[in-house]
Image 1 (cartoon, rainbow, N blue to C red):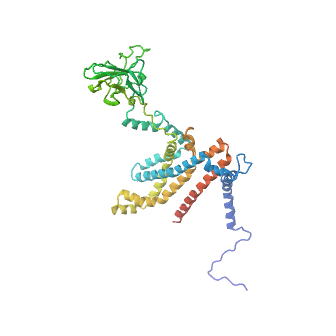
Image 2 (cartoon, rainbow, N blue to C red):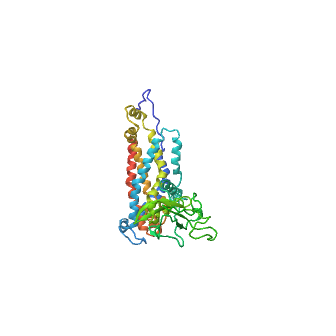
Image 3 (spheres, rainbow, N blue to C red):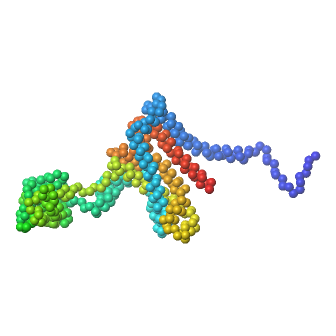
Length: 448
């Protein structure tokens, strides 16, 4: 006997027969949507990793099993060891400096009106490819100060405190009383006497290279109690027309030329030539040899060899920081915007200065963001290739070598695919712990 349903109790309609479950449909749809991504992931990530691991155990031809020989080369090959050392330098300095600069930029621009414009300018290099950035900095680091911005600035600062010589190629001409004294200096062959003017002619400076203040050279006037003389450019335009060893109307003096009187190896008097090349020494110079010191003839300061063996790695790291400091700044600025202002104001009310607020409140609260930025840059640095390949010239590329570049060179230039595969696997092993740390920290932040 059927029981009637209770009054007032809502009835659930029975599911129609033959209809598929909703759960099964969703699972099928999810698989269909994920299938293209899984295929691409397998073809572009899983297969290359598996094949690289497999190939790293075979010799150059790929026919014979080589065991761990390719991995032993990672620690015995000079090029790979240099690359490994440079990678350590990159991992330690590049992320640290970029993160610190990003933190400074984010904090300092937080309260200024033009902070957004400044952040935009700092972030703009991120829009430039590594290839373009490498070409830019190859020009920036050019040795010629007329081309390279870095050396143009460096030479300008240097010349502000140490004036360069105006006569780097000057030297004695024919029948000159001067002779080499060693070290680039010149000295008179005979002692000089007070009251007898001395002629110190030089050649070798192009007319258009003479200092702007140079005036027409004149013969020095005799002074019974002093040693006088003239130093000048003994060359007249017009196929050598003029008197050799004597100032001609068209010849210019050497303004600022330093002249020293030397007795028994000691300088007893010194002076500088006037704009017309004339100079005067006191009576103590009587009987001394006159010396034109090497400082008169030093080559002009040409800056630093930024792309030389000793500076090429720091120079390339500088270009990397130029690109990625903006990335760090933007992420840190986003984290800074999430800091409760009540904490900062409370600290200021309690008497903390800005440095104490920054060090004891801002930085600890930003620690998770700083860690994510630093770890992300470490992963990026381990794979750096473009900048090193483009900026470092062939003469110093061995000194700037990194693992990614060495992988390319072993695989394509030196035809050692087994060693190149071993480097690729080694790089993967270096990146995995850093990625694991980053993912773990991100999950921890999500739980909060």
